[in-house]
Image 1 (cartoon, rainbow, N blue to C red):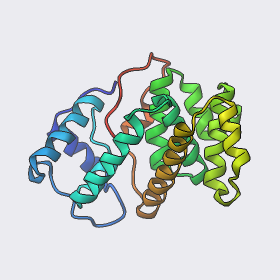
Image 2: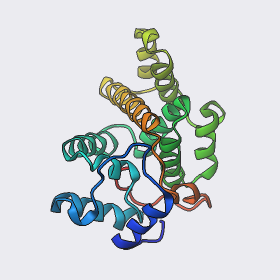
Image 3: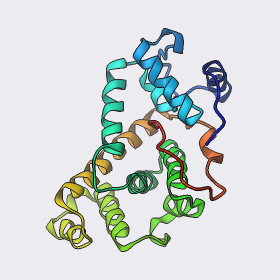
Image 4: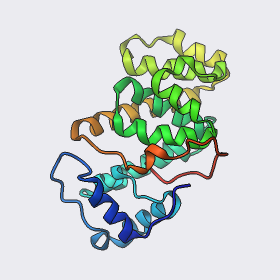
Length: 217
């Protein structure tokens, strides 16, 4: 895991890396956040060694921050037949199609973390079709890619291909929900030129074993 920093160190890091987005948003200082939000950010700091910039950006609108984090946490860590790694794989494949710098940096790091395989993270970023993954995972990613690139072409045959790989209809719903969510975040991040935290770029590149679940990204 990245080395933990204090909240003051984290604020200094954000200042060093430059603006979080290209917009002049009224992002509050940690001391000015409501206590529940400040505690949530402190939890992210404790678990990740950083407060993800997407959360910092959303903090200018606390209602949107709350909605975003609730949906993110449910999609990524709620009950599902999809593993956390598989959910991160969907995030990377969608982001690779959309060329989202922020999401590829953050979720590429998460794939490296959960898989313990730096090569897999790079393969999914570049071209998921060359990755050594199971037929089940390949079918899942093929569906996410098609839904991202050609949503109007999705037909019953595509859903049936997932069923043939063992996915339940509830899990197909989860794949579609994750794909839709990351298409939204990719577009938001691209529109405002959201910058990834620098720590993402170097993390989990040595083939270390998977660690615990990270806080929201």
